[in-house]
Image 1: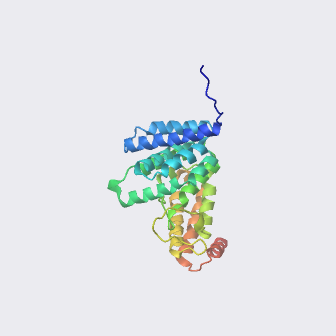
Image 2: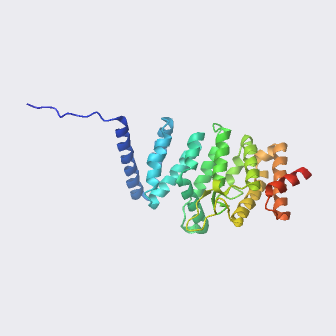
Image 3: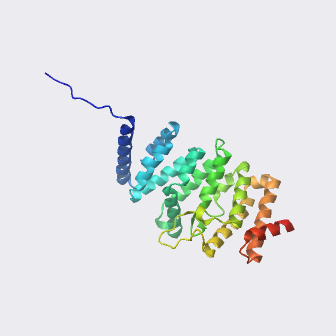
Length: 279
């Protein structure tokens, strides 16, 4: 007589873990087979949208995308970078903060640095990221805290004090007026009191600055970038549309230039306040 095999009730968590592991393996094999082909990208976009819709983006990003990234192969890396571009305009503030703290952001910085060093053999991924960031800034659904967090996060991406994003960045043309004051305030604070430990440093095989005593050259690189970014912001449509904003940015830029040109004092905060009172 046939007797049924006794079964144990598996928890939902067990099924989820198994499915995530299999999903990572499917994406890895597909990436290795497709290599430079973009046939896999629509599937990844669909997965991202489903994860966001079901409020499971954090689980998907940490247990699938970051695990795939740790595979270390170039096809898997490029797939993760493309998923970063697809996700950027769709995320909430909490999800965006998760992505900005991800090791994939450092990989993006290194990829952008290699492309700048060796253009003929690099892909167009940095251009794709520029378009994705432009979509985020131009999105009417994006909240101001989300926009400011994205601007600051990408501004912090650097190698030994040199930000990966150029001062005159094309997406800045789409910067909405409501995000400009908070971002300018962050630039002011970064110039006066640079916190090198808060930067997302992607340097490899180089001596990194100590958190308690950063190299003065690295601080100088960062401050020069801040001045150039302020100059670039003056020409943005958002700044040009508001006389108050334009005046504030231009004034801050002049103060930073004065500090750079005429002050050898290490206490930039004191010098900045003194020059500010003298205007």
